[in-house]
Image (cartoon, rainbow, N blue to C red; front, top):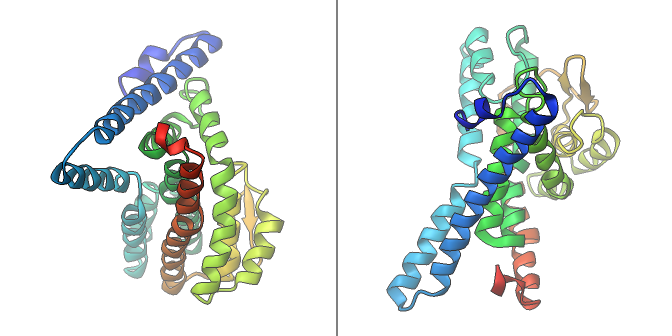
Length: 287
């Protein structure tokens, strides 16, 4: 990616956008080609041992698209700095999770941004890959993650990436449209199971889900804010929820639990039924 972006840079905006299209399409095509080749090999293996190896390898491949541990790990690092009252370190660690400027954030806004990242990335790192795995198998999950990664690297609205990252960012928006909204609903169900405030989660998602600049990010974030009885705030951009903005360690632990439960429920309620239904239609035979 780092080597391709300079090749796409040009004084002409249209040419830069075309370069961005070529980057996104070429990387996605390469990923899809590799995974379709893997699927072809798996479907043609014979013997119990080879089949078991193929299944185990496939499980490991799918696992690489799921980012539960990464989200929890980076969130824990921020909260660890907060617990030591090292706000400067917490801001620095937070910058690894979010795109916003973190250098002037106070304690509560640092924690708020951490929880916002966990809820938004529940889609990017968990339910999104599961959704497209259910639709298109391994190629779907990996192409989704590839485009998501392209967006996170060059989808910034800055002078450097505005044109080059335009196509990747819009592909990411389109791909996340359904997963984000389904995830918000599943998160409300997860709130029921973890004994969070599911009613407020539903109310907040319906009221505040469209407040973010991103057409998708607001739904899981608003659902999370409502479930935790908190208020997420990105200064000069949006406020989600009408609860407390005085955050503590318990809010973080509840957010992680809600994220994990949402992932489990999404797999049970969305991914597995998708695979069963599409298999019945004969779709998965050709994927």
